[in-house]
Image (cartoon, rainbow, N blue to C red; front, side, top):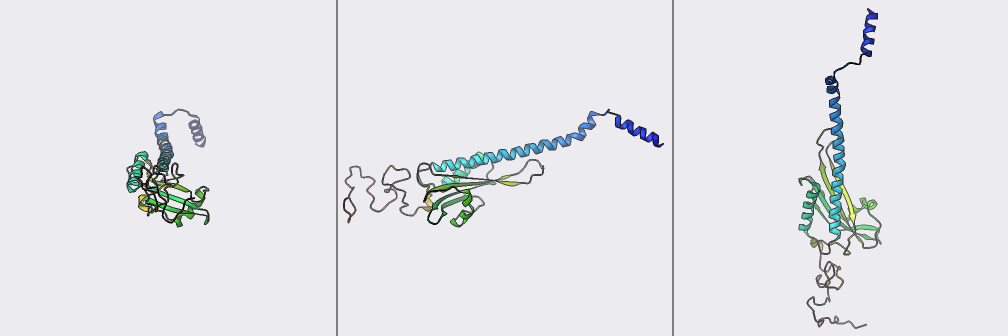
Length: 231
């Protein structure tokens, strides 16, 4: 009896015959899981890249501005982000912050910060957590910090939960020494340089004290302020 059982087991072990249908039913679920996992993880990196490129686009766009931006500009920047990320909008947040460096106090100061979404605007006290991510700057230099958040929901459940893709970038203003927001300008912002055609406005546009008349085409109004003397 025992010998017959052992003989049958040996024959079963040596038998190489089988049915392709049975083998496929065993392997097919594993192949589907591997395909789904590969697709999801590839899509995560793709979406991360798309979001980062959208972030760079907004930062580069802001760095080229020579006139003060306003709330409509920030709103449209978020709309642009929706389009670049191919998102529905509700799950995408944007925060734009302009900071300057104070060499004497060795700290970064928030000049203005605008946010669209769930995250609050930044203040100077928040910059301590950004110090390691910002470059060395000259005194009073400015940087534009752009941050985005986008919800990612995997199509297949392959061990990856829903999470937020966060992107971050900083850009130096290109054509003007600073980027202004219309809501944060108080009186003379000091940006003007006396040239009526200067990028970002002139002393005339900023209503600076003792500025010459912007419509002074013949130079007749270019008089010295009272109490001053020529060099």
